[in-house]
Image (cartoon, rainbow, N blue to C red; front, top):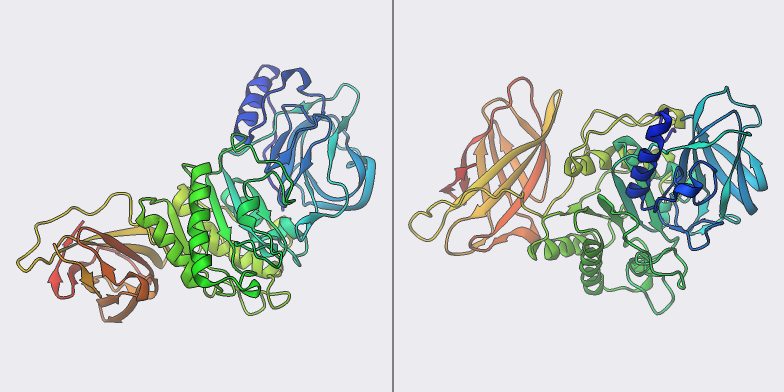
Length: 496
């Protein structure tokens, strides 16, 4: 599974400019004096994720999914390691190779490469929150006269926060075959996984580690230094926590409150990031997770989304009763990538074939279970004068994704009346044979072209002036005109 197939072939005069750009995106201060020499402070080497760089001669990755990348010239490249370590590496976008129990000066090119410019990516193996061996990068050794080249750094970065599932425990290549890494690769972004095997959202008296607390630190250890969030700004954060809390006696109310607090903490560190709260794949604390998102979006944060993962894992997608196997992680990534892409305004790219999956995930189809979003769109439908009786409504209707034979839609209901709506049914008519196959944040029935959508337990009340939203997947052949005849509890609504 290649991280990037692009090569850094640049004229000498451009190298410094690109090195500074790479340093800015990943958060590495430019160090022009060392540029090109392969040392840890070499500005041509990008360190993606949270690396402890307090020792300028030895950089330490402290979470799963952290990796380094660079370009280089010459025919060989060697990795300087302090002590024994297991690691993965990829040269020139080829499939990752796995080395075990290596130390000292590790030759990554036992067969010399053709002369020219090359790329390198290195990821240290992580198991359940701790590294196998001594994950300390002390630099690169190149041919005489060779030098590093600026890393091809992609402009966006996604953080995936969770437990052993997010780390990729029990998958064949751990972090590299986990859904976070796969999703980032599909979207063409940089990516990193922050997780702790057995970790919880809520710290417990019997010792469950709070990943939410460790999120503020450079690593998973309790005494890790505080992380400097000026190093980089994530464009999206995907949270998957709650699988382990139930076994440690965390109450639903406590989980919900602390989840909302954690989302606000993430927002404070990443003001512009889209934040996605996943329903745990086991379904634990699903209602509490959704309610926490509702609490935060109700407070005005419109860039937080609850993602209902029901049905995402195939029947053969687990390696045990909890952890996804390779097929499970690929299935999750295939569903998650379009969800994240919709908020990042990017288009998913095919999963690289060099990972040798047994069954390739879909690359053009939409998610079978799309995101459940509790936040209304940034552009609210216009307010209209309510009819007599203090009731009124306006409906926003948008096609958020379309493909051959189908599309994804989002509907927003705004209560333009003076009294709250307590329980709602929204009805409309399709004219082109559109047929809904599933919906989220609403129940539905369809007879011919007439659709009736009804509230679910947690969004039945719409205060005066407030909004709620839901989404759906539908089949369509040919024309896909907007529906008409929207009514809310029998009252005609305006359509925007």
